[in-house]
Image 1: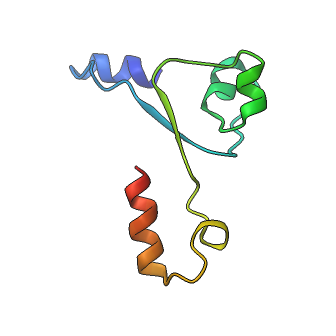
Image 2: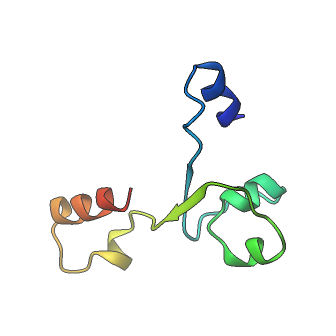
Image 3: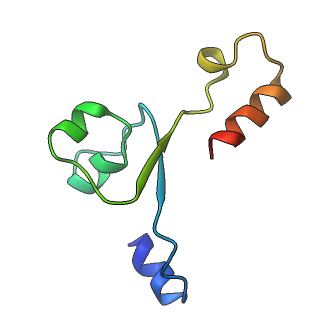
Length: 78
């Protein structure tokens, strides 16, 4: 639906959808492809041009960093 929207808006090159690792978006094929759960992908839930990045979870990925440092690092994942 999102890709169709961008085609209608005259920007068909906007194809990449960003999902988060370890995120759960549902159990349909499309939702499974967007989810960052490897088990869903192993079952065939794949779509083209879907990228996964880490969730901005400072406790796991930014220990010892202050909030601004971590925010800048997490923004860089995009």
